[in-house]
Image (cartoon, rainbow, N blue to C red):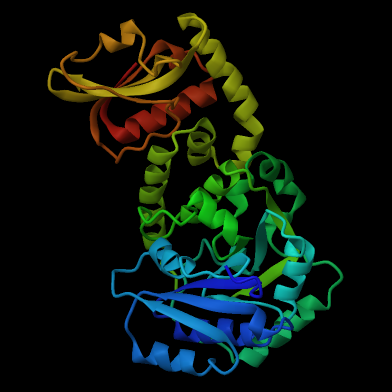
Length: 390
């Protein structure tokens, strides 16, 4: 790392020339001297127009582009740039974000001036207005328009324009802070990234929770995640396919759950994070009570195996938490000659494709749950299996 370089700004990019020009324009007007930060672009295309755009800013910014012709992968694009970071702090910024002029100075002064180890989440103003909408072709305004919008926002005493900062989300943030870290605007020390190998998981393809999964690993590495005070940028419009995003999110959520089979995550996939924050203690209590029938040191899980040549998943299975093995009365349900896959999941969400298994057996511990939770497990069983038996 270069001690004289404060920020390495990582931007993933493909086919967003208009957005990128606005983002770079906002970086070129930062009050922090340009010598104290670098801009690293992970570009997944070879495009002369992109190179020409970068050339427009080389007299005002330290600009490094890493080009690759692979198929678009957001995590891959970020990683291409992140591995070249030399600054004390790595700031991950989407190409559709424009920053106010004092952004870098403010972020440094508030959170990194004393070499603090913290992950700072920034407000993405305007993102919540469009994330669930279909967006067709977009005509961007000149940069002066967005500069004026940002100047009006900067003139406010205290800026709260992102729903993640609202009181409604305070409890959920306290319990699941990594859920609130969007890759469009988030900062962490470069030392933390290097020491813990905190690159983005390239197994995520398309729109989805790759940023949330990355932040989970940041939190597990012992780095506090905070909602930045007066740390914000303006989300710029761009085309968005709601249908394609939905398909990608469903696929990526299953990948996420397979990697991190956790009760909080499976509940969130069934009920959403706000509701998960509310019901998690109650669900945990019910599951613990249901597992007591198997004796101390047991929990409920999902077991996948083979029965007479058919793929079968059993949910509500007793699992020995010391060995990870199912209790004998569950193991005997399956063909003993073939391996079993055991997951510490109650069954609210499972990391399988729709109709992926022949049968899902919902065992008595789940049948005994409260109606709302039992019905949620049954719905998921009906999604993953051709046949459900209880």
